Image (cartoon, rainbow over all chains, first blue to last red):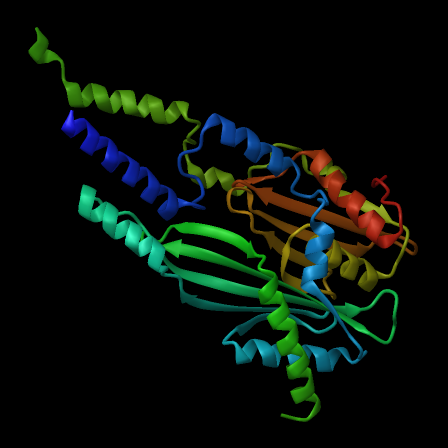
Length: 195
Length: 146
């Protein structure tokens, strides 16, 4: 009886750890039900959704200048400030893509992996490194020809210790976008003052 | 009698059948040219024509529409008229390329290609969703290619 109780306790710990450590991992352990959901979402890949407009608002700011070159320079300067390298730049279309490789080790995942390792003697992969991207598009404001619209999207790809892609996601924390735009205001000012 | 049954051999055969039945291909290099549809059919549901020759406006609107659909713009070129982007959503991430070219004195041709789940999307309804969104953003009707 005691053994059964112990075993079920370990099983619970294992389930908890594997959930937290493997959350977001693609491809693994698909059930019929999740396949159905996935297909539904797959069919909707090019549909505008209810949160499309909310997303647009979060990712967009208007600046009262019509000097696209100045805005692009400010964006590039800001990306450089944050350690991004420029992957793609098309001035005619106002498109800038920056990216950077960074570590992606998180304390929570390490703790869960260590626990599983100690209890069961198996190594589970944890997130190791990530490619973070910032995609910026600059365009004339549709309603106001004296202003420029800047829209940014942050995303990242994460690989685990097995070198498998464990996450591919758009970053949607509003604070990130607020911070970006406040930095861009500053960068525009610095660019204007030849810094 | 039982000693003639070779368990590892039988397992190998069993696993081979199992793998084959899971839809594995004979040679994965064959995926290089893979389309199920004919090129004409493919182009017809992936393309639309708009009554404008303002290529820059079309490309800019394609970019804005892709962003609204949740794509991260990875690449764009006005001269060639190409925009590429990725949509990151873990289990249903997608990649998309849209080409834009002026077709004649009054029209511009737009073509979209999407891949998802390691396959090209060959469902015309999905492309229709894109052109509905793009048409709205351009204030123009998307015509089928005649």
